[in-house]
Length: 138
Image 1 (cartoon, rainbow, N blue to C red):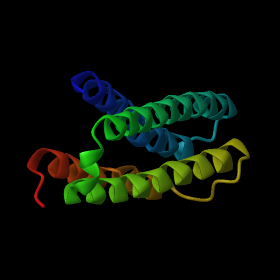
Image 2: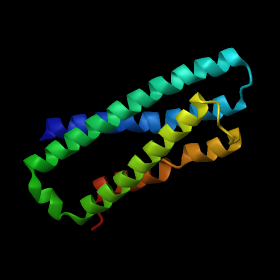
Image 3: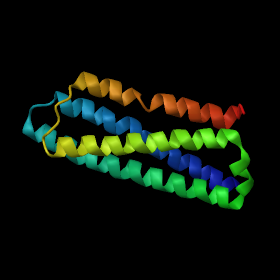
Image 4: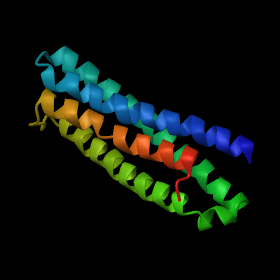
C-alpha cells in the first residue's frame, strides 16, 4: 500500500506541475506578438499538456489501485470530499485543453492578466486536498 501511495503522490505532483505550468505559459503566449516566439510557446504548451495529462492518468490509476486494495476507504467522508475536488480539477484540466486549442488555432481573445488569474485557480483545490488528506477533518 505504501508503494501505491508514494507513486500516487509523485503523479499528483506531476499533474499539479502542469496545472500551474501550462496556464503560466498561456500568460506568456497572450503577451507575445512575434511569430517565432508564439510557435515555440505552442510547442511548449503541447508538451506541458502531455506531461500533465500523463500525471493525471497515473495519479488516478494509483488512486484507484489504493481503493481496490483498501475498499474501506470508500467509507471515509474526507475521501468523498477529496474526490469531489478532484472532479473539479479534471474540469479545470479540460478547460486548459480548450484554451490550448484556442491558442493553437490563433483564436485566443483573453489577456495576459486574465491568464494570471486563471493560473491561480488550481491553488485552492490543492490546499483543500492537502488539508483533507493530512487532517482528515470528518
